[in-house]
Length: 483
Image (tube, rainbow, N blue to C red; front, side):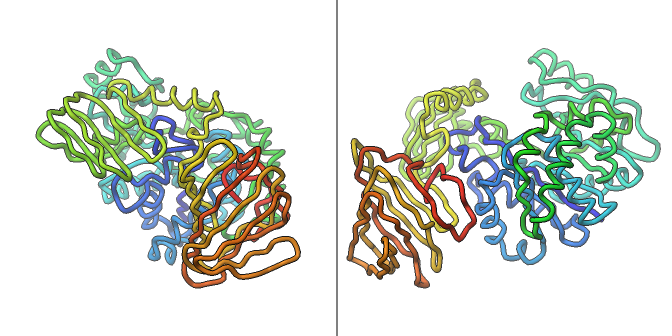
């Protein structure tokens, strides 16, 4: 049995300001209709023996991931996805250990096809052919890495040097792994012809990788096993929330360091399908058709006397005049302007934002929640104005605030409001008031979206000023976004 395992982690800091910690790279759409996560699941579906798959992701992304699956009815009908929800990111070795333990319990003897959620592979038929060859090797006990034939002297990828070729196969033994090289080394590797990019995609039997972890990284497997044992009793077909305390004991280590560079049964399958890990805005630009001046655009843009530049806008016109070799990425609350040659350094901006506590490192102006969305329209000293959209039949948690009051004006739809010991309806063009310390809940009892404007007033308007009493989504900890 083949089970695709999608690794959907990481914040994609090089793709800020579109990728944020609360809405990371796998959910990006890159100008298309499908997100990178949706594309990965659709690519994996034909390879799933009985329509079963797993996604290893952070617990904060559970509801958004579920929505991504539900948004593709054909995918939702055909693929049974279990989300293995990490309380914190601990790198790929612990993630794969948890997935293998889950698989051995779910389908003993399964072969796992491990795919990062944020890769772009346009030629899905060529990928499927390579994947089936990898499965055949894995069923004979091999740990298979997908190596991508280099098309340029890329310095942003790790490389694998090919050893001797296996009999009756395109796969080769691994001679050595090489970290991201400098430009001169990358040119040399391209010229030599026996180096491939390390794609971060793998195929192996669940028991095979567990045995390899036991042999080469037993401490990670021991901690992962303890975490799974503490989790399995509460797991369902849809999700398993990994026990936090034992999982935190997992060493933060990649599967490459933990196993791939040590095990003797590791082979690499050179593959020629088009592939990109979309690791920078320069990589995004390379996926788009360019005009005669080498420019690429997404959104409402206008370019004059501009060359080799990527301009992207979400909700307004962006005009560029006399630019060359630049990246211009505009979102409602942040603008990035960078030289294309410095695209890898965007992560340094995110690091500085985090260090200063700036909200733009984590959140967009519009934030998705299980019940809908909220958008910060305006804020200043002692006030914040939001547009709140609640989906039909959904509700926010029962909660209270220590430092702020809230004024709610319904724009469309009907709200059911609970405030202390009262419950009442508020229709369009009507309003209500929630005092500081008032226990309250907002619900949409209707079949159309509820849209309202919220005006917050108080000494402190941070999103962590909340005491949550009950929640239909099972969230218990204070949120980092909204109720």
